[in-house]
Length: 283
View (spheres, rainbow, N blue to C red):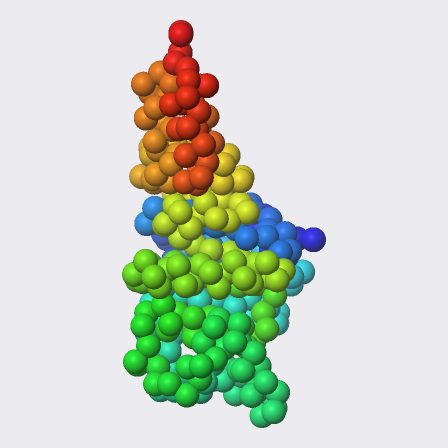
């Protein structure tokens, strides 16, 4: 079942400006983990902001969980169904104590106190931050703050989690913490849309969408998308290191597969190469 359906989406930040999104059509199924890639200015963050009504399409249509985003009366419901997490965790932390920060949105929604306490406890446990419930938020690491921000969204019990470069300002440990949490939610059936510029994060998704100059350039499995390395390089994007190595070997004439993403896949190919099971062109 589709939970996001964008058809011929066009958006401009002002009436006389060039469109940031140009005829974008994209469908996301319930329970999918979709990564959206693109260089700065590609339109990926603008598209993410449409998913919970921060931006409204100028042309085309967008439905989220069956609700038309262009209908102003649907926006409150859409924003309850789509939780947004942004790039800078410090900009999302409001309260000085972890559990109070997670409860902030629930208080604004008028959730009953007992139910609120239950949701806060469950959300913090889900991101492995329950033991930090009474800690000061300013003492947390970047990765911990981002997990608290995600907990605040989870407490609202959304159907879809949209994250706009949530690991861009984190160190490798913080990035790993956030990705671990996302995989956990995905395995539990949540729909996840991850905007990222890290190729290794995109490679972990079910599906990768590449945007360029407001349009969708590629859409498919990580193996399909990243084997188009030449096209990705031409629009200023990288590929996972394992994939890049395969392209370098292919350039030297070795008949290696291009659809290689992980270290394990790379090691298997190199093992075949060293054992002579993979030869060179013309040999």
